[in-house]
Image 1 (cartoon, rainbow, N blue to C red):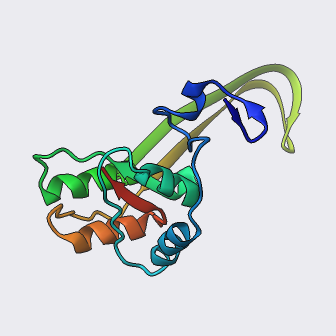
Image 2: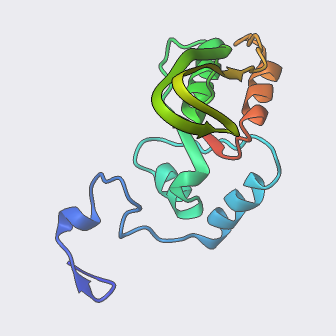
Image 3: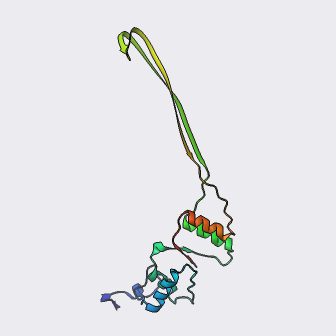
Length: 170
């Protein structure tokens, strides 16, 4: 098949694939309308029967890093959808972390003969010193109880991680 002055196999042009199909034709009014509505901070629903180009329209207007895809199951409740969004968006809760490491070191030196040590002169003896080190790492994270039924909690979580993508439900 000749397409865009290149020769392709039929399966390369038609059929199911992950990328935008080679035979996708931009429809100025449809593509423009989708982009305009995405900028209005409202929900957009693209619907139609199977193999009508819904996914291709999305792929032609959005880059893959501009959205996350949530695969919904028919028995899911709103809570399941909210939790799937948080998981896919990368939201994580972390408990407080506290680490303490300590240790004691002992240094001893013996000498025989005349020695000048920090201005002290001696002929025979032992010098000993103890030193103690302590290292503490403490991470205190704000704890937030998330109610997966409350859309305001979900929005708060997404804002906390500066989530800026669109959410696609299938």
